[in-house]
Image (cartoon, rainbow, N blue to C red):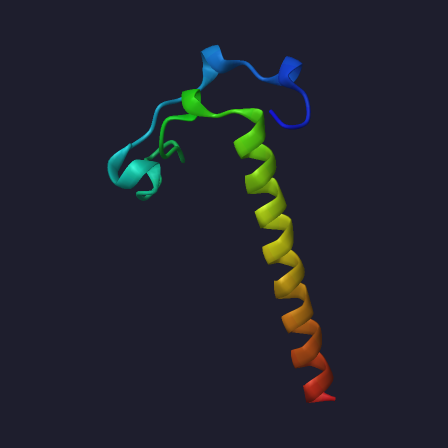
Length: 69
């Protein structure tokens, strides 16, 4: 939703297991939690966090590779 709300179809959201605040294992459809509570602000924060974590992981891989040389 942080990219474009017009491409989001909330009527097709699947409700998954809401145990542990929606942080339980994915169900057989690959769904966890209740996406109907999603909003653009939280989506942007989550996307930013994912990018930050990916960058850290890449840096760790580069450092490991350099140490092996």
